[in-house]
Image (cartoon, rainbow, N blue to C red; front, side, top):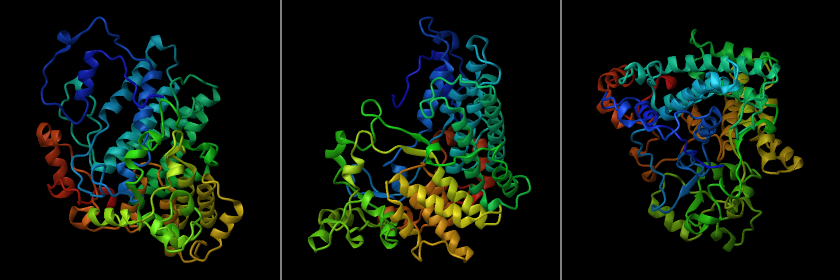
Length: 504
């Protein structure tokens, strides 16, 4: 599967796509001049879906996973640990593909019914990509976005609350549409390489994603418009209407192959980065302190510890580097063998492990958190234990070893609510390792768990930023609307350390 599908789109559509971001710098019409009779004017819904799913994928061992403080780069040529965030990216090109997929699926020549799987998934993907932007930036254009054909080149902003409300509505509609299609035994979903056209799997992913959004809104649980607790409880109480993943078999995940879609770390780039990627203390040292068997699977022992007489079976042989450490110090210590590197024989493979995008492990911890917060009735300890078991089972850890781990006083679910909530959030962080894109950061930003390490190596005056800046093009081309949005959110400042609405 190609990482990016090159679609045969005409020049007119290319121009519309370029204009479909926050804004454009001119309204000049090139339509007649740019027409090419030798190029197709349409793309099939299947081809567009494949492209959208590629954009949906968030991979392991990326900048995001480094900012999640799972790993560190000790060599500046490849990367560093700095949180010197500038202009954030947007998803409007992908959202325009989603819009086009809906149009193509609804056209008379597609042979599809009015309600079809492409239109149902379009609602899910619209929710996903708008939420992705608002979580990184704050308020964003939504209602007036993608309307250049109507002459709207400088779209007004929607508040973050409005984006969440609309996204929850889309997810509700997507669930209902998929349910109807499943009853009708509709199998018209070509181009779906994530789930192979399995609509029951998509319906479970839609509802798991809805619960993710509601957990993100934990600071807004009293908002009468959002109805956070009510929506969560309704979903949990009605599994026939809102089916959810039952195990890791229901994960929405990205699977690798040995040819066109290799695992990001693989033998082809072993020589470049194998000695440059070491484990982060935020993640690895927590595994060690909990005597977590995942320690031995994800990391290599620090060479200096082995030289000092420890064995690879000793937890004390595993040491992560602080993300806040200066790069010079980290590099020097790594070269001396003081830090653990990532487990090369596990992660430098063509196939590698599938990368979960929306999964059962996260769902278990989200339910446990909701029960802990009093949103729903249930056994929080049971959901917490299920999340840990599911995570460890993906690493091939035995049932006996899992049981022993769960019996440890620091791991066993506490009877003290605040302590238990911290346990849920920490285990959720451990379960997110190299999966689910930004979710580890978003949960840390919302709750403070785990404590992210800072120092000269993280820059930004030793602070973890709360957001990205708006794109520079927006400052230039949509100044008036951006100025209003900045004033209403951040007192007029576009600053990476400002708190967005969802965090207040």
